[in-house]
Length: 368
Image (tube, rainbow, N blue to C red):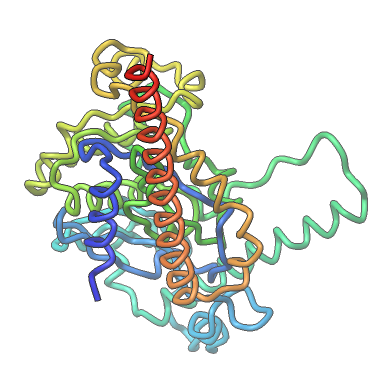
């Protein structure tokens, strides 16, 4: 059987789409439930020579908030006199293989920070499991209280929790634009969900998909962009609703690998629908679609094509909510193939109709 990415490339060529530009967008309505444990999985990004740190992608066990493994770690009895983790901080979610200090912890009774690898694995797992369980149960209790009191209008401000600091802060600080996807509100809303990232071609074909754990973090979007660039060597432009921060991330990481250097030279353009929300100087100078240099790069490319494709998949979110990690991947790949075949058939029908009209016009002109 032909590999998935090779089949998608063949479909893209059959449609006659441009191979130098794609639109990237996240679909968080098409999501499933996940474990509440943060910093639980490491995903290799060999094209960037990086490791992506993300939350646990497993399903919750029964009616619990955690998966079976992390629920059992939470319920392990704490040994008498054992060290306890008081706080933690994440230095970078996308780190190199030689970097052992991406996650640091502070033990109770200690003032300094130390690498998480210096703490026993059971102690670290117990700390994160109890934190995730406590925060998620508190959110559930607040929802119950809100329903019972029938609050309307003003809602109390939510306290900042451990999910907030996993963003890529430095690329965000590079851009003065305040429109991003990693606020505390976004992290809270997607704490236990797994959506998908889509790469969409000019005619609406799905070129690539990747599961997205939690909110649309900059590190996961950068990892997905690198994957698309590796599978499509002619790619030179990315259309995205948060292109300003993604461009800043690519520039900052340009020295890590040849592909990272190539990404730093890409054109990143914001789609027309979200352009009005980007008011920073960086956006106005580099990423807005109304800029003359970006108009030349787009050359008629429909910047909102990813939003259109997402709207066709979003009604299936109520089905994906009950899927496991592997079945969700299988279902989405099958849906992507069906969607692409339908788009190719529609393009062929459109071309056949145009050819028929052209022949009729030629015949009428000859008779006249």
